[in-house]
Length: 448
Image 1 (cartoon, rainbow, N blue to C red):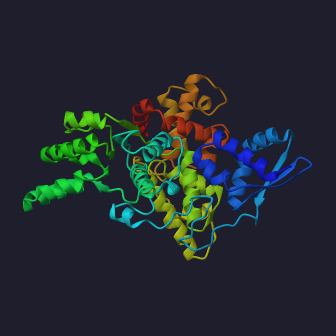
Image 2 (cartoon, rainbow, N blue to C red):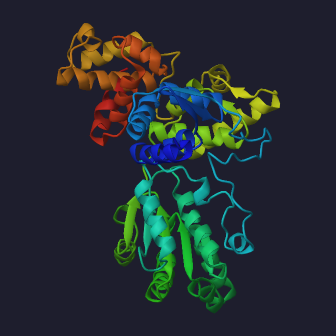
Image 3 (cartoon, one colour):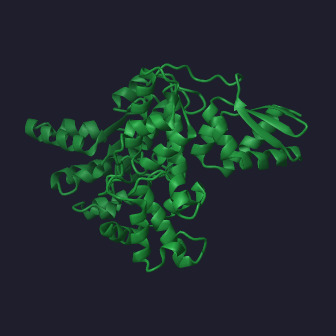
């Protein structure tokens, strides 16, 4: 049997079955070391990746391998010296998590692009895969495929990263391209300076002779009449010339108050996509990638803890992971454990929307309030029945125990009838992705 060819086929299948983030961190770095008597030994670069694959993705690996070997195999994952792990220096970059980027070009630096905001450094998952696919289309056909390209979403979901990655890739393909990244506020400040110095011609040439503009936080021109007027003319000049325009905002064009109708119309004339906060799997992949980029290792339980605690803002997640990784290395520790992460949080709540902390809120109180709100018995709420009304109440109770009482997954599962932690994860994600439940959630939180 050709191990390399077989494993390549297995990984190609898993790449389709699993999210991009999970594949990039947990699947891509593995190798098939041997397979004898229906026993497959699979190599991983780190103990935590081996453990995660053994516990969480075993069935995925087995199904794919069985199909390509026509056998019923047993699998074992272990750390292999055949895979070169990253060095322990803080700045090292492991090949299997994030590909090592080349030094930023002079043109990229002059264009205002940040060296780390590239496609190589971007984790792609369900929350941003459509936007990512569209960005790839823009790079191949700038000014033609999607123009303008309008990206919107909340704080810290990766809008700026994706936008600048487009810029990096376009300059890689054409270093002579006249490309500029700038926040909308910079456009306004330059306009004011040009008016004061009576040098509008220079201002117009600066922005209207570019091949591509990447404008961050375009919502900040709303309500500023002259800013909007000048940006309208800049937009028209570039768009009519077939130049690529990429914009980001915290909301859709037609929801930006104070934005002129003619700008709304033009912004929505291309492709408008939203980026949602990363789901649990994607947050885990981001954490794993960030930690290995720092040259450290992390326990799966610590990964899950972090992914549960910081569930909306990627920027906040990056900051916390970086802080923990550097602190761990400063203390000459190679592995980030659950205990280290819990100590780093020092009991604080990272859910800023929560008014309560675990010190003020007991699990019993949360369960009692939820049962009373849905007019059901506590015993039924934590029981085995799968009636529709009980399932919804149980999902919301699990969500509140996680976000308000700040309990770990396993404990919430134990409280709600000894359910598996994956069931609790499902309940949490179900509530998180249902905007219609927000008024009900807020109502229950107010009564806690």
